[in-house]
Amino acid sequence: MDCDKRIEAAAAAIRLAEGRTGRSPSRVRLIAVSKARSAGEIRAAYEAGQRDFGENYLQEAAAKMTALSDLDIVWHFIGAVQSNKTRDIARRFQWIHTVDRARIATRLAAAAERPLDICVQVNIDAEPQKAGVAPSDLPELVAHIQGLAGLRLRGLMAIPRADGDHRASFRALRSLFDVHGDDAGDHWDSLSMGMSDDFEIAIEEGANMVRIGTAIFGPRPTSAREVPA
Image (tube, rainbow, N blue to C red):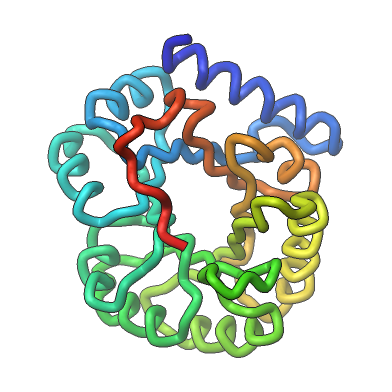
């Protein structure tokens, strides 16, 4: 199946999931996860109408950004944020979905040349090997980010346990999103959860941003690196 047909199919599935929840259509933002994909593949997806793309690795993304600088792409950073790369991440990406430490938030804010849209990554299933702030530490991190000029705190992001109950994890993240809504500021509006295998469940549980890779581009190349935890 061609990329344009995959995008069309994903968009149709998103609309159906929105309909099942009684939400208005086109409320869910589709982020095409383009790690390990070529600039040519991204350009083809753009020409098919896709505008939001998610990358996990700064160096890989930077080369694509140069090759695609003629396109008005919205770039989302969805990988682990390393302290020594915050400057370049802040200056290249419009959205960062994986902030989970006050130190990282502070460094991003110091490097920002324009307002950065930020999601806090929550370790919703308390996996010791996975990045993300613990739910109990979320209020402190939210308050810290709220005090940083240059960052717009938009919402929460999570990746559920691979072998767990994804619906329960999504429901727990939605609950945290609702609990902190009154304290998180005027820009608090984004719940980033759901990938190719579970995005419909995520939408049913409240997601309004889904991160889809293989359902857009097809199976990943065998040489593709795994997403950092």
